Length: 341
Figure 1 (cartoon, rainbow, N blue to C red):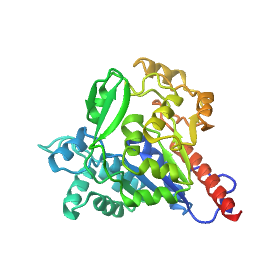
Figure 2 (figure 1 turned 60 degrees about the vertical axis):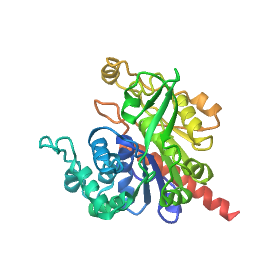
Figure 3 (figure 1 turned 135 degrees about the horizontal axis):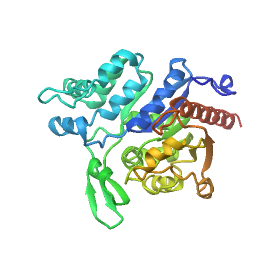
Figure 4 (figure 1 turned 45 degrees about the horizontal axis):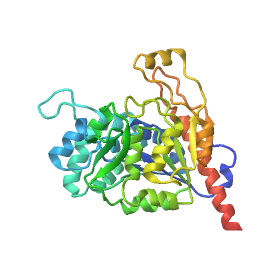
């Protein structure tokens, strides 16, 4: 836990942070923010992509016609009061059993609750109450959606799993169906936010899909909040090979419009030799942190030491949460000052 930066005591009420994404990147940020929420310093809302079609989530989606529960389950566990017990229960994955093998208990729980309540967002709300989470979690849409990618050679690939495994560069991403509605609660949270975050996480399969839901990108652009993108540390195999940080930003602007990001958060701590060698064997290298190009695009760069001390290259959850808190305070103070003029 990192102490709140100077200035927090001058800000009235909990800071409102809305985080968009999916996968382990979003759940890591939420885990880091949880202690601030526990202390009443932060009010957290997570808006989670629902295009996953692989693994347990994909099977449940096809068999029961529900939204994929996996990324939402990870977010609930990250924000839960008791990660040690209930969190482990929700993450428990069956290693055997006909029809059960590969499924996690949390995914099955959300599937059952969806059928009991008749509504996936309602099932998420009830599950969140069971886990006593700090914050709120919303799917980006309540409609069953998939992903379609147009590649550089004009070929078209459908399905998140196939897209992420393709060795072709993505030119454009869209949802299937193309027009899907957001949850009203998610739009209201964006409008009230002090800080809106995107990433870290897979650019094309975790971050951008949220921006393709009707109304979300425009709500972000209209919001008075600071809008921050936590840039990835490494290339995503095939999905973002040879991408620099500014290439990530260009893709976000291409799909969500300029104004969806006004800060890019870059890591300043170098990788260890062992980390570089481990990833170089797979032809995966660090994302180039090309600050001048980002600033030329009218976006401010925030550089911090964000690399976790581990064998794998990962963001440090406490470090990225501390940056989020700092930016939220800055945004709240700015809004208070504007109201006072």
